[in-house]
Amino acid sequence: MNRLFNGIYKNKKVLITGHTGFKGSWLAYWLSSMGAEVYGYSLASETTPNHFGLINCPVKSFINDLTDLDSLIAVFEKNKPEIVFHLAAQPLVRRSYRDPVQTFGSNIMGTAHLLEAARRTSSVKAVVVITTDKVYTNNEWEWGYRENDRLGGYDPYSSSKACAEIVVDSYRNSFFNTKEYGKSHHILVASARAGNVIGGGDWSEDRLLPDIIKSGVTNTTVVIRNPDSIRPWQHVLDCLSGYLVLGHKLLEGDPLASTAFNFGPADSDTLTVKMIVEKIKVHWPDFEYTIDTDSSKVHEANYLKLDCSKAQTQLKWLPVWNTDTAIDKTVNWYRDFYHNNTINTGRDLDSYIDEAVKAGVIWTR
Image (cartoon, rainbow, N blue to C red; front, side, top):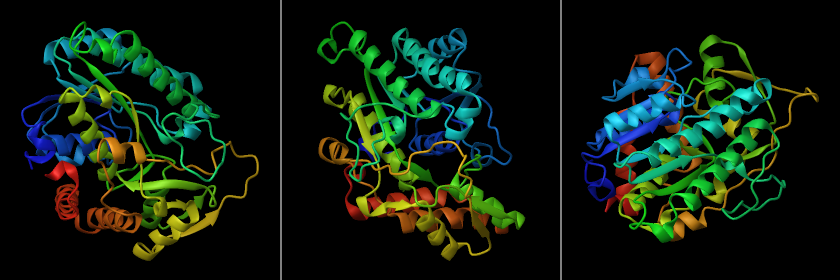
C-alpha cells in the first residue's frame, strides 16, 4: 500500500479540510493506509451515522470552521503540513438556495482562508483545492466541459464554487506563480473538478443513492427529482485517485500540474438520474420511488458532462471502475452495514487497488 503513487505519501504530513465528510473521510482512510500522518480540519459531521465516525481512522482532528482564520493558521503553524487537500465546503445545491450567505462564506472565504494559511506556513509544498463539475457556465450542451471553458453558476452553490476557482487562480498568480516557483516561493496549487460521486458511508441530504438506501431501510417511498437530468457518475475512489495523482505531481515539483483538472467517468457512464435509479433497483430492489412533478422547484442543471482528456493526457490518470461496478460496490457497502454491521471501506479500497494494478494504471507502478 505505501508504495502507491511512488511511495510519496508515506510519512508525509497531510492536512485534509472536510475530513469528517464523505469524500474527506475516504481520503483520510486511504492516506492513513499509505502511511501518511494525517491531520483534519472540519466541522463535526452532520449525520448519525457518519463514515468518519465508523472507520476508526488515525487522524488528528481539529473541529472548527474555516471562517476562523486565526484558528486555521494556528493549526497550520503547529502541525506543519507538507500537502493540503481542501474539501471542506457547503456542498448542496438546494441548501444553497435556503442559505446563500452561508454558502458563499464557506465556499469562497473558506478557500481564501485556506490558501492564506498555506501562504504563511513554510512547510507547505502543495495544495489541491477540490471544487465541482458545476463550476462551468451550463449551456446544456451534449459535449463535456473542458478546464478552459467559461466559469459561472446559476445557483448559489455552483457560483460559489466558480468563485472559489477564481480565488485559487488569483492566489496562484499573485503568490504562487509557477514562473517564480523555487525562487520567491515553494508552493504549487491546483484545483480538481469532479462529477457526481457515490460510495458507501454517505448519509448526506439530497443525495440520490443515500436517499434511496434510506428509503429502503425505512420502508418509505423516495422522491426522485429531475429524472431526465444527465450527470457524470463515479465511485469515490476514482475521483480520489485523481486527487492523489495530482498531489503526487505537485509534491514532485511539476509546475505544469499547478492548474485545474477535471476528474470524471468515461463518456458511457454519463447517465440520466432515472437510469441510475433503475440500475440501483437491480442491486437493492427493496425501495419504491415516485417522480417529483413540481414545476415550481428550484433550478438545477439538466445536462452536465466533463471532458477529462487533460487529466488523462497530462497526468496519465484513468478511472478504474465503471458505473455498474460503482453501484454494485456502493449498494453492497450499505447492505453489509445494515444487515451485518460490517464496515467494508477497507475491503473496497483493497479491491479497487487490485483492479487498478491489473489495469496497469500509472499510480500503481
